[in-house]
Structure formats: structure tokens, C-alpha cells
Length: 150
Image 1 (cartoon, rainbow, N blue to C red):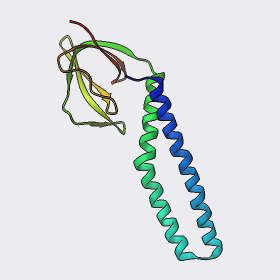
Image 2: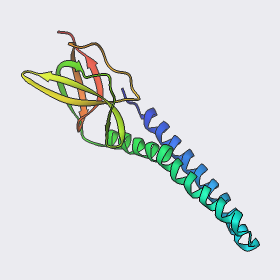
Image 3: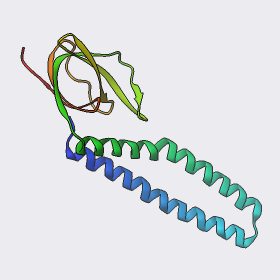
Image 4: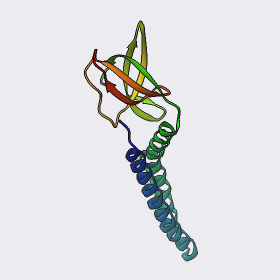
């Protein structure tokens, strides 16, 4: 499911956002300082207010999710994983918000025990219910899934 290309893409998107943000912050800062020096208080105050509100909005809607997803992928590639075999049962089609990211909830029945795992919502859901699968797990997140023969 995951490849090193996924991590590189997430890193590239994160870096592009941060570089663009710092350039915009520098431009807004120069304009704000100019307004202070020029003593154009009303324009400077309104401009700074719009800049602050826009910055908070963009960080919350774009920056933080990009950064969290990069950290998630980075941890997944560097963390310890193990394998689990069992029957796959896909939970309801609603996405679950966990650790500030969205996931699909899936159940894997291993003997008499049903375990809950999560699949990244950016990835497609695996095969149909009831199939025998072998999954590679990092914490409670599915790193890789393979359909096995019965």
C-alpha cells in the first residue's frame, strides 16, 4: 500500500506549503512595516488583521493536515511493524477522525478475537468482506495488506 514515493510526495507538499507561507509572511510583514513607517494606521491595522486571520485559517486547513500526514508516514516507515492474519471485515463507510487524520475502520478476526485497525483514507479500501488476509501493522494502522488463499 505505501511506498517511499508516498513519503517523498508528502514531504514535497509540506515543504512547498512552508516555503510559500514564509514568502507570503515576508511580503505581508514588509507591507505592515511600510504602513507603520508611513503612518497609515487604518490600512495597516486592517491589512494586519486580514493577514493574521488568513494565516490562522491556512495553517489550520492546509498546513497542519499536511504536516500531520507527513509525520504519520514518517513514523510508519521508521517504526516497528508486525504481521497479523485473519478474516477481513470492513466497518461502516464513514471515515474515522483519529490523531487529527482521517481513516477507514476495518476489523480483522483472528481466531475468536476481533481486532480493530485503521487504513489511511487517502488509500483505497481493500478487498471485499470475509476474505482471508495478511496485514502488516504499525501500531493500529495497516501498513500493507495482502489477500491470502484459504
